Length: 86
Length: 432
Picture 1 (cartoon, helix red, strand yellow):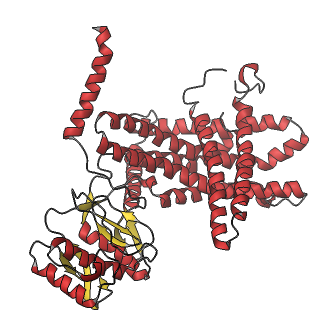
Picture 2 (tube, rainbow over the protein chains, first blue to last red; picture 1 turned 90 degrees about the horizontal axis):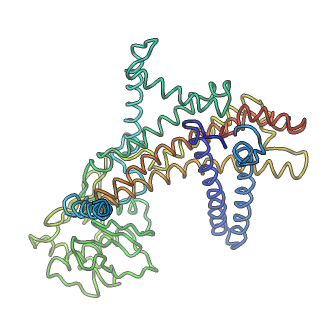
Picture 3 (cartoon, rainbow over the protein chains, first blue to last red; picture 1 turned 30 degrees about the vertical axis):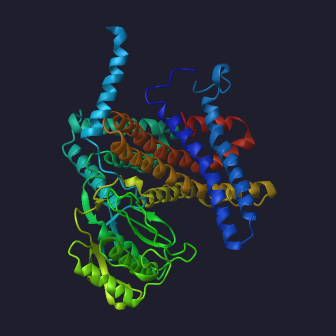
């Protein structure tokens, strides 16, 4: 992989940090919403389970959508699969 | 000599830490999550984070005005600095979004970056969290009691101020300086939370028992029993008779809590404790993004701008991304897309808030625990965190904006073949 330009590390670093936080937020929001709805409706543990499933789905689905373009750009590695930007 | 270098450095570092502990130990910090309200203007609470935000805006406006007042073709000094910052940002934006989009998004993205960076770095200035008005704990505690009195709600959560007082579901407790038993038992059962007025009565009896010879029947301030009007009157008399006892402050125009047993006959606005005053500092300046209200505001602006750019570029077809009725799977994916848009607001807001607030707490605690060396290292780290968080916020807004305006093209290209991806890559894939 070619040496990044000056300041070229900022964008990938910031992007990956953002993606990491996105995973965490999805799961936490799902769980908190689930707990709140369980508390509200008294249907424990229905909504917490739904919240976990929805949170994980969002985290994985959204995470893949966020990371695919990143992988395409930077994930070529030694074999240079993606070709450009290396 | 060389082999002694490392041990010498370690000894010097330890000595530096010890010197710091002896001569420069800061006061024990109070960690308060919501921004402290400095003053009220009408219905608007002016918090210390708002004041800091205005200060940052003022610095940016005046700085930019001064730097660009006498523009030269070949820039020097401040104009040179401002131009180099703008050029650097423009370069980063063009790399990620392409020239056309970069120029369009630049005002918002660059504002995000510069303002967040300045606000974060300003939060590390020495006078942040250090200067402000002090509030006597004997009075300050009553502000909390007063809120509950106004709402007619018993205390639910515990609020403990290590330097002064504790309020929980059994009442109010006083933490005296250097006391062995910092928390005292109010005596009421936690299963039956007390109201603000009842807590006040118990507190007055407790103070009379602690500071004077007064002894109440049936537990009084400590026991589970009710405080009778006679008991309370006697306790107040005992407090007034003893010159060294705390004094009840009469109601003021702003603050007043009536007693439960005596009603309007005894209305208190605070307690004046004898001896050195314990005070809580309400800082005048606090890091802007250590207040979740500000990060949510910024996240909402980011969200609205991304949707605005998406709608403006693609028209109503932009909404097709979220409401796709062509099949079950596309419909489900659309709903997920819609949910992710809103999760993004939470993610944006809490990422910035969490990082900045945690940094602030870390520095305050380390200044108290290990001043000098260790706190300096963390200080450096916080400079980096402030920069990275500004970059994360600005960059992610940019990437989502690029995704919003190019989504249509991307799907279109997906149907037509792989060629489209190259176009996307060259125009706007993140991380270029």
